Image 1 (cartoon, rainbow, N blue to C red):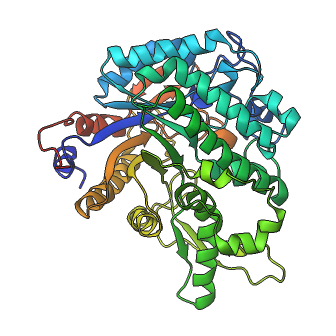
Image 2 (image 1 turned 60 degrees about the vertical axis):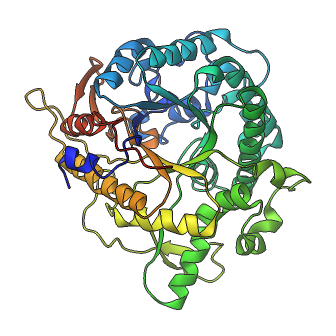
Length: 457
């Protein structure tokens, strides 16, 4: 259903439509106003890590153009903006001195959102760890969890009175596995032991962060954003089904288990528990504090088969082929039904609070032609996935909002600037912003909200 007004009719009137970004991907100004380097600044400057050795020094220059960008968000008619706060701007060395100029920037940003009637959804950590903390071991060190707790307290003391919601972390799967096991993201480790330490200390940092939020800003709804993987077995064979369950534990269970059940998954612990850092008394209680909401980032399914290789390390899976022939320009399979089955499976397995889709979108690299960007495949992607969200709501799943990824084209991590996810086209030479066809469609949809037919609570 591509008619945005018809689609709007499938959502309750108070459903929240928003757009999302992240600090390192859009802000630029990496050396201004007291900010010090993050692990991503260092990683980007190492040959062979990021496409074309591109970096975040300028990005979308949002640090200087934030007012124009907030006007753009207002013009798009969305009700909420999800953004992240850069730890290296607030506490440049991760610990020690607080940088007031960094807090001033987010003060202005949040006031600007309030002035425009846009809800502010902040994320405390979207991967830009202060580089200085790598001297202690970064996320592989328990001390980083306590540094995060203090950072969370500093931010929430200053900004919490105007936030509509806050998340501790964005996609710990990426900052744990992709960054410490697969070496694709900063700091670029390829080491299971390092990854297992990062896993527990990131989970601990989340719990300590929730503590900090509740202490200084108890009225702000606090949550966590997880890129849960829709793990699909490559076949109906017993071996592949068992492989899918191992993959579920490894990719989802190691985050959902501790946070929502107070435990790591059994098979995971049997296989790898001996290599985990010490789980101290009280850690799991801290990690499993009740959340007010959780965010799901979804793009593509994960299809797996059993890895028959002798001595294959847990989860011992290999990739299985895609089912859909449709792929985005980053090579990800487009398969919307997996979003629906994933959400239902997670609610079956865990006692979860209200859910927001905190990221969903598609990479298509169409350029500007005659002043327009015709990105019909992205529009189709949004329409299809929002249809699945509407189905979930009608099935009684507490889906409360949807944030499109992304507001605008930006620094796509290891892919640099060659991959575009924006509803808004960015000309990186001139910093001109142009609303794409998909952006105009989303504008029409979001413009229908909030409206009268509120869901009965």
